[in-house]
Image 1 (tube, one colour):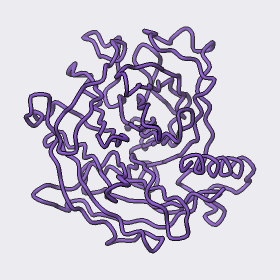
Image 2 (cartoon, rainbow, N blue to C red; image 1 turned 180 degrees about the vertical axis):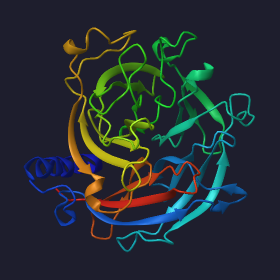
Image 3 (cartoon, rainbow, N blue to C red; image 1 turned 180 degrees about the horizontal axis):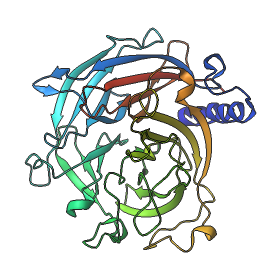
Image 4 (cartoon, one colour; image 1 turned 135 degrees about the vertical axis):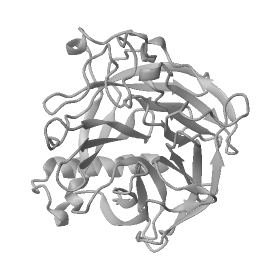
Amino acid sequence: MFRKWILLALAAVVVAVAGSSAPAGAKSKVPGLQFLGQAIVPTGTTYAGTTVGGLSSIAYDAKRGVYYALSDDQVGVRYYTLSLATADGALANGDVQFTNVTALKGADGQPFAPQSVDPEGLTLTKSGRLVITSEGFANRLIDPWVREFSLDGSQLRALPVPTPFLPNATATRGVRLNLGFESAGVAPNGRFLFTGTEGALVQDGPAASLTARSPARLLRYNLQTGRLDRQYLYWTETIAEPPVPATNFAVNGLVELLPLNNQHLLAMERSFSVGAPDTGNTIKLFSVKVAGATNVNGADTLAGGLDSIRPVEKTLLLDLDTLGIPLDNVEGMTLGPKLPDGRQSLVLVSDNNFAASQFTQFLLFAIPKS
């Protein structure tokens, strides 16, 4: 019932967005989701002998009333436990408190070797386990993975990743470097795990450009059987802004998924262009419907058949540029607790890349009541 209420509320948001003629940047007319503030954690902040940063994904543990945020530090693979002071219905600097840090360990019970894992996605299962994804390193033929961990950081099992996702020596197959499994989310019934590639597999099509979208894949795992049972075509958006100069790096891709039930999800896409105005980051939230989309599970390649594949349906919910604030590299998203007025909270977090020019940014939103 809880997620059904959220789904109905977000459906109202979709209608509001579709019917809104508010120009970009009209802060007072951002439809649907209400922005309730932000908290900035400066780059260089330390906790328990670690540097806080690289927070690429976040999950809320309602049973314990805390959040878990994954750091994508490739030297000390870890996640943080933290709290957000949102009981007043707002978020501001000083409202973020880190309370624990937990090292993640491999199947051998030892910490991961440096530069062997690129941790990106994190979610909490109904049984209280963490599911974490790694993008791998396509340039070094280190495979991406999806694995379950206990809260003490011990690895419990690895979920299967099919051959089409594994990079090969000729660079003709698999995830692209830094465009692998960035997201993770579990449906509220606890049965299904969703993840997705940030952009197209090499054999499926090109990465996003200023003029072309990219054919990424969504994956659905059955957590009861441990099997991958569905794959769907997900078209990312184009890169939002040209880099300056034009030869600089630019990217757009799917960075987070938040299932509301077995068929409907929230998706986050992040576009970044070096040298673009402000921070160069453009963050968009979408409502996604997988019902009716073609199941492409088992396909080695989607190229040549993209026109005949029915993709998931996407509807823009919010372009964060309309908030009128500088945006960092926002990559994580979770539903938090209920707010004092009874509305559902939505929390976003950024990956600062441990860069002095960036910052860790927590954003708080309220989902309107249906």
